[in-house]
Image 1: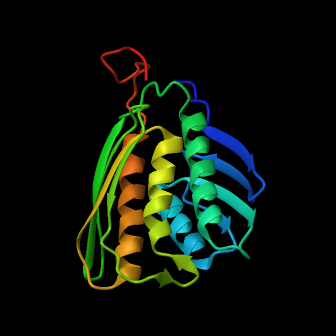
Image 2: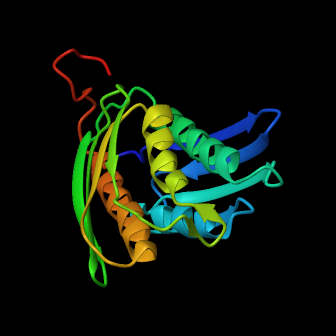
Length: 199
């Protein structure tokens, strides 16, 4: 009988003068999410990411929303990226690369991930509205970029089409989720997936 692999889990607390973010992340989960950032549409996007990546995620944020939503969006994404990085450890025995398309009605998003250890976000969502609920749309892109930086990954996200900005943003997060699900998948080896021998 093959011994059970240890769970890939991380707990991160990120405190600044602007926010206090707590994250518990399990990579090999069922997509259960409890996200409470104080910004409804951000909750919606992060919940969709966890659900479709099949990550179990508990994330809470107390932030300076009396200023605006920027610090909450940025710091939640940074804390989630830090948790992802910690849960992956040396990144042994993972697929490393993942790509996916995700439609949401008329919108179609593409995401490509490389868990390379080298942060490189390239995000083009083409959203035109200023706000989605109480989330500034510029922070949709910024959250994905922050996730890539703290998660130490190359992340390319493009919106191929779509007229509804809610659909565009949500399709982007779902595509990232599906790409991450493939990239973090265990491949049955104990090797680091790099010619360098380390990530």
